[in-house]
Amino acid sequence: GIQVEQSPPDLILQEGANSTLRCNFSDSVNNLQWFHQNPWGQLINLFYIPSGTKQNGRLSATTVATERYSLLYISSSQTTDSGVYFCAATQTGANNLFFGTGTRLTVIP
Amino acid sequence: DGGITQSPKYLFRKEGQNVTLSCEQNLNHDAMYWYRQDPGQGLRLIYYSQIVNDFQKGDIAEGYSVSREKKESFPLTVTSAQKNPTAFYLCASSIKSGRAFNEQFFGPGTRLTVL
Image (tube, rainbow over all chains, first blue to last red; front, side, top):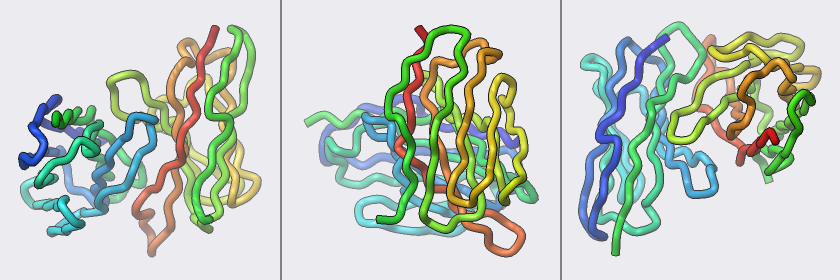
């Protein structure tokens, strides 16, 4: 299956700072999703973004499918942004989501 | 409310016992999925089903079984053959668009502990 790599593995930010999380994938994709896992384990859908750019409030994402990477931008971070951010991708022609190992974000006041 | 429900939230099992985890969705989604998450790891696919009465093995299907008798329901049985069943189990569903299955949405999960 497709390989999905996320960086950095851990990130500590001061409240109000901006950050960029990266996701590299090894093959062409027909699905690319970003999730936030909260402390209770719930996976929250952030973006469905196999290509292009989307924005939702303080969060935005860009996927450059031809170069096989996606970026998640968090601006003006808040303590409630803390948690683990996962990128997951489905290889073109397949139906299974493959997950990266996540970026653990800690926002300190 | 529309959504995906999983029960129970926490489950304790003795070694050698089978246990069934419930997953129900009222989103009218075509496909349903079961994933396993171990501490500090991403999710790995156990089984998925694209249509009623049909399902496919994922990457780590050994020691698990599923059924899909209704579109809304996709229960997962963790059998005694699963060597290391303690984990967080998440169910997901997605709608079919053309030949592809699109954005997946997840339930709240079940934490299984084997004593």
